[in-house]
Amino acid sequence: MLMFTTVDVYYKGKQGTQIFKYIDAVSDSQVGTDVQFTGNVGDSEQTYTYVIPAGYKLAKGQGTSSTYSFTDGTNTTNIYLDHDVQTVTPTTIPEGSTDVTKSDLTKTVTRTISYKYEDGSEAHKPDVQTITLTRTAYVDPITHSVTYSNWTSDKSFTDVTAPTIAGYDASSTIVKGHSVAGNSDDENITVIYTKKTQTTEIQYVDDTGKVIKTVPVSGQTGDKEKTVNTGDNIPEGWKLDENAPKTIVVSFDPNHPQTQTVKIVHDTKTYKSGDENAPEGLDKTVTRTINFHKPAGNEQVVQTVHYTRTATVDLVSGNITYNAWTIADVSGATKGEGTNASFDAISDIPQVDGYKADHTQVDQLAVTPDTADSVVDVYYNANKTELHFKAVDEDDNNKDIDLLGSLTSPINVDVTTKDVDSQVASREADIKQYLADKYNFDTVDTSVDGNVTTYILKFHHAKDTISEGGNLPEGVSQSDFTRAVHRLIKVYKPGQTDPEVVDQTATAHRQLVVDKANGTYKWTP
Image (cartoon, rainbow, N blue to C red; front, side, top):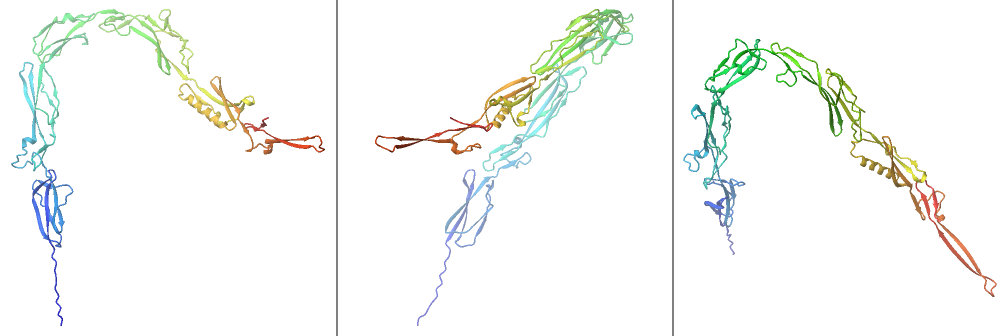
């Protein structure tokens, strides 16, 4: 009797190894030692969460973990790391840092404004301004290299107003503020105080208190007093009042009086034009201005009659007595009797090609001292020209050829029109095109009548020569193009009662010439 036994055979997965390597993406070198896991083929899928070494961060695009399964042999996965560069500001410097110190990230710029007299002594205590700049450091914890941002500050040196010191002028009243940059150095600015010019005005006044003349007397702060003789500066035509002082003492301290007065009394004097201190109103010019408004720019003719007179002045009351006017000189005018004159006429108005002036002449004009100034404007208007177009039939006694209205409408131009030639050429081309089916262009003539220029385009009839076939005129058939001519020759030879007959045929051909303009035709010989 046979016996059966069952044997079970089990398969176990081979051992496999999974290695994770941390790689510095900058130097492409391994960081730390391998992280190794072992297991068997067929084991469940595993997850490894990365443990980032100090000073590093995962490179861009890297996940934070990997899943893996064991396979036969060894499988290696590289994990790429970037240096975790640290941003350090003056307030976030790590304690004990040797890479960056506070002095690396802060900088103080000082501006000292000193105030001095010309001899170098101090005029006022100085103003001191300080601004602190900061910057940011970027520290690589692996290489310990450090880079820096630009220096920055949210402050600027403000304007400083120099102190006021009586009797002195500061070289700068305001020291302007400005921004501070990383390359700014400490500044030392000195404001120098110089002595002011101290001025007293000696005012010569009449009995009403009116100032007739002012004489400034000047010196520097602290100068010695000066004695002024008042009689040395009396205005012309005046004299000192009997009670006026003969001298005045002027001081130059900061609190000196700004004015001192000297009373004077008047005299009278007769003035002519051009005299010093002469009153106004001794000259008068009557003017006529003629403006020629030309297209290329204005031109001007100025005509003048210049009058003058004398005046007697009472220097106390200021009353002025004027004498009669006389003519001093003329330009573009003619003197007459006494104060009478006349502006000359202009009969030859300048001409401009293509334009017409709106004046044929500028008339003569009488002038007296009471004549007001005047202006004459001569304007130039562009001459208008009409361009007309027509077509004529040279084969029909130059009879006009009918055209479309758009081809005969005038073109209006003047001297300012820039494209006359192109407009004319375009219109001629349109007429030629319109008549091209029936006429052949010959030439163009022009005629001028006043402001009208007529372009006369001359044409011959177009001809069509037909040998046979085609579109034949009424009354013409295909058979009209040929004609057969027969000749019958009878030859009587001796001994023959019947002649020999020779039959000859000749065919003639001709052409038809059709006039395309009027439809007439004729045959060629």
